[in-house]
Image 1: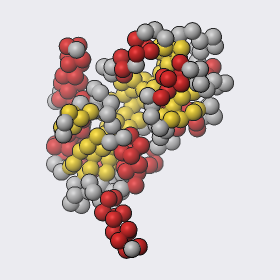
Image 2: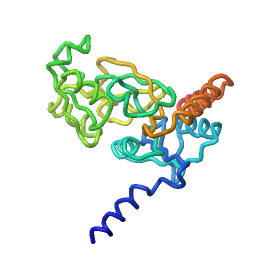
Image 3: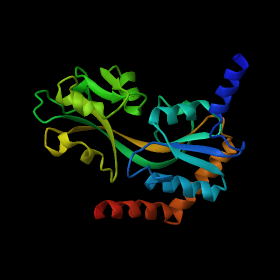
Image 4: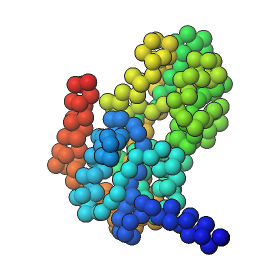
Amino acid sequence: MRITLLAMFFSAAQAYAGPPETLFIAGEHSPPASWKEGELVTGRETDKVRELLARAGVPYQIDILPWKRAYTMAQRQPNTCVYSTSRTPEREQQFKWIGPTDEAEWVFIGRTDHSFPLRTLEDARPLRIGTYNGDARDEFLRARGFNVEPVQNDASNPKKLLLGRIDLWAIGMRAGSNVLAQFPAIERGELAPLLSFHKVKVYLACNPALPDALADKMNAALDSMRRDGTFIRLERKYTQLEKQK
């Protein structure tokens, strides 16, 4: 029985591995950066990752997974990468970094009828801040001694705000993102962005076992995309799609 269970564990861990030279690329559902239409993984950052891997001649498999699972896989499994990953000092030694592919702004969302001052990040220190378990904002604020209350599903945080169970909700907003439009309470004017407290660049983050030569090759492919205009073309493609909605 023990041998059978071990065999099942290793089989599950290698489900996406493919041949040794094949990379498994994981992203999360985060339009317009990455999402899944049927079996097709698409999005602005997805297209950038696909293009750089094609130029580098790297075979890969790609899928959309819950963020915590995707992130943990990239930490623990060789030949595995996760995008779009915020590069922070807390994470620096945990991955090989390919990019940046984008940048994000970290914002506090709060109730429009709030009574506390919020002009700087330090003003948030006595407040209860809703975060997403395993997210870069949770790590960033926790490392600096802020009062964070992580949840397993980020969609719980606007509900907690409305109920007065937290004072702020820390989110990441990328260029062209429609994340705020997904929450009726923001559309109704009950919640609103209160403070932009940090900016960060995001990357394709690969398991540390990725050979340096391969990481260099992938970064060189991304540099070539910047030089020949492909990077900007992909950015504009999704900007135009957002405007058409």
